[in-house]
Image (cartoon, rainbow, N blue to C red):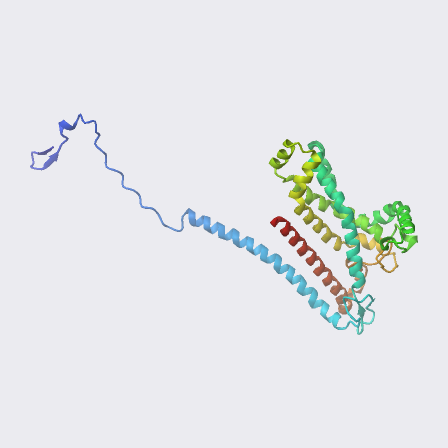
Length: 352
């Protein structure tokens, strides 16, 4: 209702007739604050943090690739002068290694390649079943109060220095293995792996002893990776298999092994890479064996790494050093190829 005040102004007053309608007079709505679009606020700060983290992550990845490429370029650059003076028919197929006369050197890596691959594969064959059994026992059979101490003890094997393994293998393990090595050498010589080599050193400074020592050295790597993957097996799948009446071994065979096979292969390839580059232990065990390599476990020889370590005194000449750097380049490529094949196998299994 509108009235006129004493000064002639118009005044609006509520109508008494509307007082019983039960409707409240609405208060004026507050004026909304404008939405800020300033990019310097919190959202922009979050985006800035993401950009920084992404840059650091990408930079780390690029740095690793750059370091690997730099190592390869350095090895190739230092090896080319020696390869230019190499008089061997073909570097990859030659077996001679005479670098006394730097103007006409003869060096080839065939024997080094064969010994390196042979002893590494032999050690991998020995270590893989043992590592698999240990991983299954620790994750599926051993009680919790026992699994942790046992896992810790296996991991401690990786902390033992290589030189200790070499001395232990030559002076402690070799005498124990010698009767077995001699028996294999005498009774299974029709098989090329056990054919007559240096019988007097059988079980001593031979690939047989070196491979067993190397298997012990790579065992904790394979076991640790395999164990960590087996632990991640979905608990629901294990309980479902048990609910259907499966035994513990059937659970392992149908659930745990299929789930963790890619991790098992990854661990094995990591162990193989470790075996390919092992130096001091193999140098101590194999350096006293002069028998030429002939694909027998009772032969001797040098691996890439042990050959380079044994002749470090010749590195005072750039051409002599270049010959060994060329061998190191082949080892670098071999390790790279092995790791690439391992990743391809793991990726193929994961895609299934």
